Amino acid sequence: MGTRAIYTFLDINGEDKCTVYKHYDGYPRGAADFIENAKSYAWKFPRYEADEFAAAFVAANKSPEGGGVRLVSDPTSYTWCDYHYIIFMDSYYRDLWVEIQEPSGMRWKTIWEGTHTAMREKVAA
Image 1: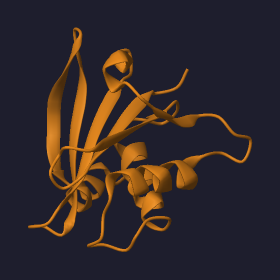
Image 2: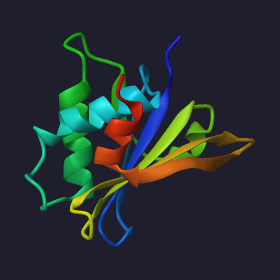
Image 3: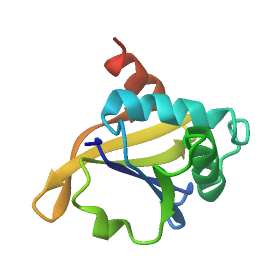
Image 4: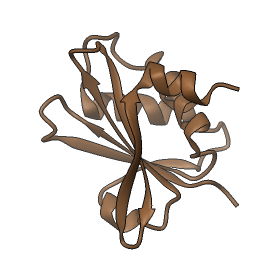
């Protein structure tokens, strides 16, 4: 059984969003790697667009056999996932900001937040 996660990519104003579901390896270490993988398919920072980065995330992390990762239209219906990651470009840090949430009843509870760089350092083996 996979560690399921949803990834919500927000624009700078937090108004536009695009959400991706990934069936496997959604724990924070896997998520940090998946986000890193997407960077090579996305615009070079500091340019960042939520929908473009979500597309890069899918392209970078889709298996050759297909399946396992896809765009979703309603992230609120995915409360059965193990993790929810909210991601946006933080212009102050010039890095992606990641908020990690886990389910708490029918809602999500934040368990950690910080830059993607800090996340990678925190979850490194």
